Length: 52
Image (cartoon, rainbow, N blue to C red; front, side, top):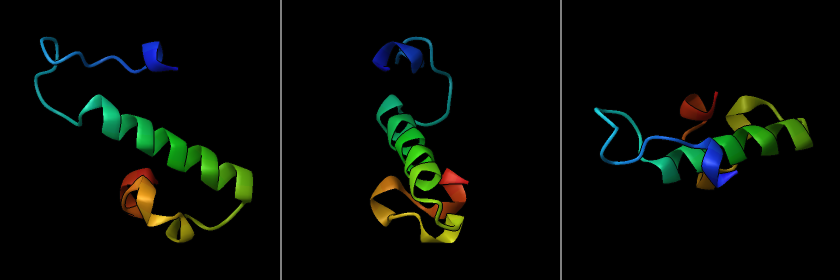
């Protein structure tokens, strides 16, 4: 999955770091697995507004 998250530092103009993108994707997958509302996504994946 690491290859699916581009944004190498030399190619990135602005935006989130690849590590943050990975935690957002993990938060989305966690939400889909558990079936919880967006506002109940665990905080270790980031703010639920960002994950949403």
